[in-house]
Length: 283
Image (tube, rainbow, N blue to C red; front, side, top):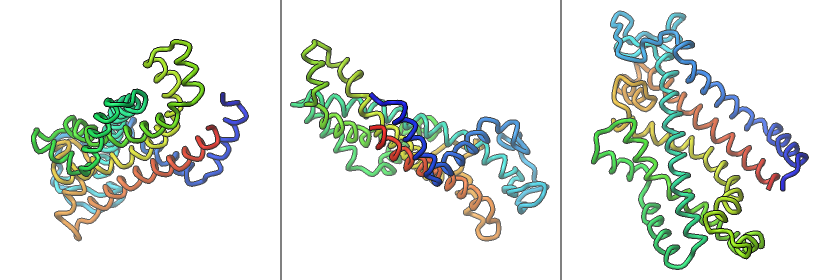
């Protein structure tokens, strides 16, 4: 059982990690700008079907802080709305991947035998295919959309969580508290949910934070290749792709969208480092 003093020491150590605190601040600012985009964005109407050819390809100035794109839409406003799509994509993909991966890894490690062999060999097959390649193959068979991108990335991502949970549960399978629960007649489902899953939680939280950044980066890569959310939906990867056509003259579209991706990925990676330290103490 974790004492309150242990929690306090863990949080103090997390707070002393300045980079992790910086990561939390970056994520907080992104979340605020995404949630309140309709209020905070200078030109919220530019997130949809809007054209303003008079101000097309306008460089950053006092009116348009990050400039405009080829049809005159405010880049800052579109980035703020694009944060919404990126965060939603990351949250949905990571949640699905954790759910499926945890179930597969836990069942394989707990039951063992043929179940373990079958489930882990299936996991190995998926792990042998690079995530981007697998997601592209799935999207190549369907109509590209935000929903299909989420499904494709979740299918490509769950094996990593299965491997993680499999390793943790296998190391705990013969521990006294698990054996005691079995002797008392607890069902396998109850043991996995009540005894084993809480011990996997620290690892899952840390990996989830890392995965948020990687999934957002993967989603941007798919959008860059034209396999993400279709126009006019604001998307960071699509904005980088559109801006790349006009480099180096109209540099602000690609550069600002690329920096937005960088901030998102950096924030989640820094928080993951702090979570790893935090759970090392609590554990």
